Image 1 (cartoon, rainbow, N blue to C red):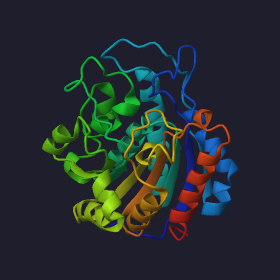
Image 2: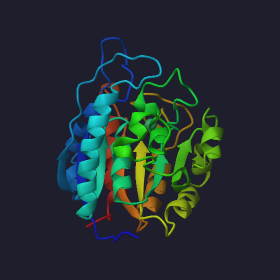
Image 3: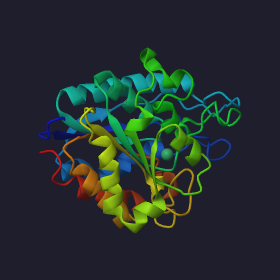
Image 4: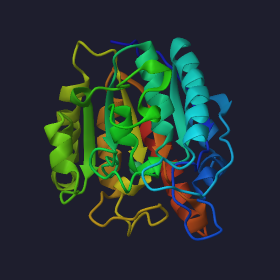
Length: 300
Ligand SMILES: [Mn+2]
């Protein structure tokens, strides 16, 4: 297990490369999320050290069905993000990575694989599209991120010749909607699924179930991925693909407190919040409050 005496390090990964254009001629606004979260005082409230920004390349909207949009730019960003996360892990920091869309999970997964064998608790819709199940719809890496980091996908699933970055058996997808079209396939591939109904019924017990998977002695620790779309869209509408049946803030808070209470946690990221869909930025302030709340007492 990794030692617990870690200082939080706040790192921005403001990439929007993994999403479709929200409308013709527009670009996804999730690259603005770190600015809103930081403007809510996140750096000071976390007592975090400043770990800077890994800037993404230019967003291009063009897409050929079956080909990942902005693939080369995502690969370049992922390698640079991986280098930065890896350096933070070696310094015994606990990275708090602010996305950006879920494509940032590629760089995080690559960093973890370079360092050891890690688990993942993903609080997200099930981003599990890949060439094997929806070949014509592959294209927006944000919706493919969990498949890619567990080894399903093209070049982005095998950066540095490493595949998979994380093993399905070491991965827990929490908060997925029970009717998700990929749930059966993901379970068949060995992923551990804890759907949103189960989390809602008893968030602490659901989190404990996840810890049973990722606190195993043969793992070097685990990462926590939080997509704002795990929240119910009535509470958090400022996301790329709102999907009813999500968690409440209280439920997510309970889950994260349990997970972050584990000595195995090595880092966390927050993705998908889009300030362009949040005109008064109140959703962003609530997310900053959530992070400040659950990370209080974590690290030093
Ligand atoms: Mn997602």
